[in-house]
Amino acid sequence: VRDHDGQKMSKSKGNVIDPLDIVDGISLEALVAKRTTGLMQPQLAPAIEKATRKQFPKGIEAYGTDALRFTFAALATHSRDIRFDLARVAGYRNFCNKLWNAARYVLMATADADGGSAHAIELSAADRWIRSRCSFAAAEAARAFDEYRFDLAAQALYEFTWYEFCDWYLELSKPVLKSDSATAAARRGTRQTLLAVLEALLRLLHPLMPFITE
Image (cartoon, rainbow, N blue to C red; front, side, top):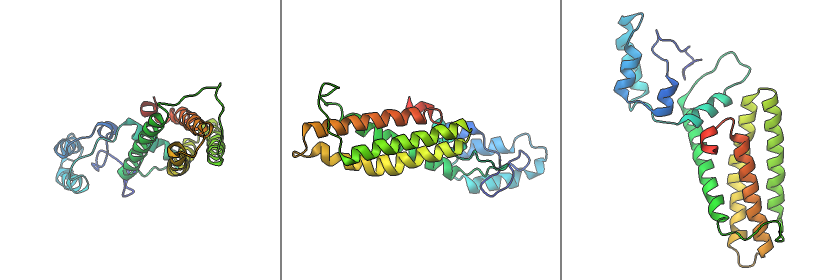
């Protein structure tokens, strides 16, 4: 595992990051103390402290377990080296937030739904499209999991969640649910599609992000 500059992480270099400090966060002073304690070459402590203060002027934020797990899944390529950068973790924390907000929208949009199998539903082109894309993403993720290619599974689910479900379908669903001209069957079709895709997505992401998906 290498740091953001491509240097191998080692205690002697003082560039190791404790995963728990990424999950829970750590103050700058505590981080400096951790990196400069018990060094095999104590004379390196001033340089390590200087580099640490420059790289982490405010310490390390709390990014949470799911963001860290997803980062390592996304980095799990066939390469022998992993270049670890906290910017990737920050990006996947944003992904967690995106998923959380999407789930809130779906649950709010379907809270007052009438409906069940006894009621007629009408699927729009957007409904059929997102269901198809969800099935495709699920197949890609399943194949990647079978081959232990967690990086490919993470990529497939990330791209479907962000670019297709959140950026497109959630926006396409709003006019249907808010329009007075949409039929009750069309609104039911959209609500059922929202719930079906969200549930499938949470199940698919669960091995990589167990806490937020639960």
